[in-house]
Image (cartoon, rainbow, N blue to C red; front, side):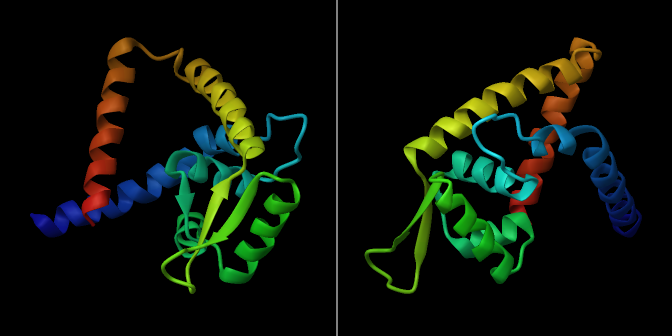
Length: 148
């Protein structure tokens, strides 16, 4: 029974990934700001930082599925736009933290407001029950994935 469930999970994750990129990812990756010309990885990095507050480059790289060299280039570009800054950890010289600047926080807040409007419009065609089911299901998936 567990083997069959794992097969369904495998196939479900592949289908979810495909549908997510077709229906949702393009919304989240779009650059809504006229002040900055961020690409999709820059936007993703900023949204992650906006949710977490601070993050190490290693953890950000894992979240974005990026190699160290590409991540360094991405962070350099965001620093040049004055959206993020890096700061050495006070207790561990080997560790660096990445933070949003005030300008970066403003950018993220603006993007999030626009994303919320777009997501609301995207889900507008669904009934309340479907939206409620989706909300509960995504919370369940997140909670289980955190346990992995």
